[in-house]
Every structure is written in structure tokens, then in C-alpha cells.
Length: 319
Ligand SMILES: [Zn+2]
Image 1 (cartoon, rainbow, N blue to C red):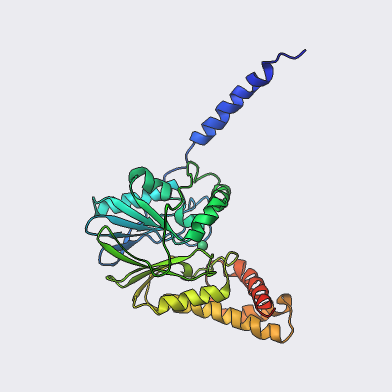
Image 2 (cartoon, rainbow, N blue to C red):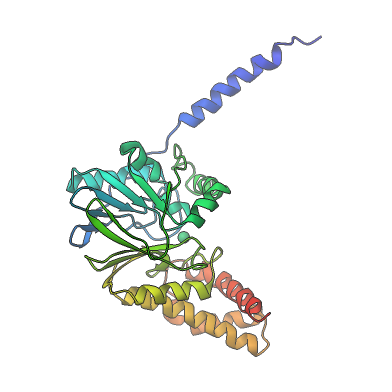
């Protein structure tokens, strides 16, 4: 007869192994400079591309605003390590506490760093659209974290999800830390959960992933029509400085060029659809017509997928 304690004894070393793994933490993200884009407004422009061992999953544009009574952070990044790096840059410029964090949308490369802010400033309010909060409840944050762990080979280890605890909706106007913020939302844009954050005093608009600069976006969770509407909404604001989700900050040309890509691609799909072409047949024709965008990061990797998604969208719109 087997010793009844044997299974339990076998389990003990396994338990210690998993505890040790949970305690393991990925390496610190090296400092990236915070660039001043307007009075009291800074952006840390992350590397372009997808999460990798080399970039440790840091690929987005964390922003912050230094107000009279506190600091507001927008999209602190993908991991606890990135969030800690962002806090180090903030502390070079201000001793004020972080009083609020805004998450532009559900994709974890923008918000899984909330944990670092919450650890340092437990009273900071974290804002996101209610659709984002719903998606986190459905497990989207954990799924994204697992993908990041795989793509960075564990560089983000130690990160846990800290989702928004406050909702931000279309038309909201808030004053936090002495900073005025206005929220813009367009449903079904880049991810169905995208807010854009305007700083009316500084004439700055944080676009989230509704716009990227010289980099292809992921369209699997959004729609071309909604993304186009979101950019038109952004261009209708009085903002003069536009911060994309990835890529360099600039003027109106930043959203205008990305809008040009989306409208040209969708327009071409509609035209060829009406001619009776399949997505497979129209793909090389459209890729050739988009030659001005060929040097964008990840163009070749993503353009076929974009055409297929736009094709499905056009088909659904006609039925
Ligand atoms: Zn995104």
C-alpha cells in the first residue's frame, strides 16, 4: 500500500518552485528621456515595434502632466518595470504626488504599469472607459499579460493587473491636481474602449492607439469606420499638439496621415468589393496603391490582415 503522505510530500517541492517563480521579477527597464511637448506636459516616446526581449515590452508613449497640486499620468506602460521607469522620470521634474492615471484603452502595453503607480501612490485614481473595465473583468488584461510574458521571455515578470477604478466617458470634463482634462470617446474605434484625453489649456490631445505615427496599428479589436470617426473627432478639437499611442508627437499632420492610411485602405476595399474581387485578389492591388506607407514599422507584417478585416467590415455593412 502506498504511503498516504507521499502525494503531499511530492507536492511540497512543487509548491516552493511555483512560489519562487512568482517571486521572480523581470529586470528594470532602463531610463528613457521624458520630452517636453508643451508647458508642464511630457511624453516618454517608447521604441516602435512589437514587444520583444530587447525592448522588455516597453513600446508605448507614457505621458504626464505636472499640475499645481499633483501629477496626472496617461498610459504608464506595459509592466511594473516600465511604470517604475516612468516614475523615475517624473521625480526628476517634480516632487508632487501622482493623483490620477488615465488608461486610453484595453491593450495591456498601455496600462499594465498601473501597478507601479498604485504601489507608490495608493490614493491615485485610475480612469478608463467603462468598456475597458468590462473587458478587464472578462480576462483581457490577464490574456495580454500572458502574451507579453511570452513575447518578452519573462521580462515583465512580477507584473499584476491593476485595472481602472473610475470611469471616464465622452464629454467628461475633470479637474485633477489643478489640471483640466476633457474626454473624447468614439465607440468601435481602435478597440471599442478608446478614450482620447484633451488638455484644453495646453492645446494637447492624447490620441491613444486611434493614431500611430509611422507604425501600423492593430485592427483586430476595432473597426476602420469607427477609427476614422475617432480621428475626425480628434481633428475637430482645438488641440494643436497630438500625442499618438506609438511614434513621435507632432502637429495635425500626425492624425491626418494616419487618417489618410485608414481611409485610402478602406476606400480601396469598398471599390474592389463592388468590382467583385475577393480579398485575396484585391490585396496586391491595394498594397501597391499604399506605397507611401511602405516604410512604416510592421507594414508588411500587418497590411494583409488589415485588408482582410476591412473586407469583412465592408461585407457586414452591406448586409
Ligand atoms: Zn492598442
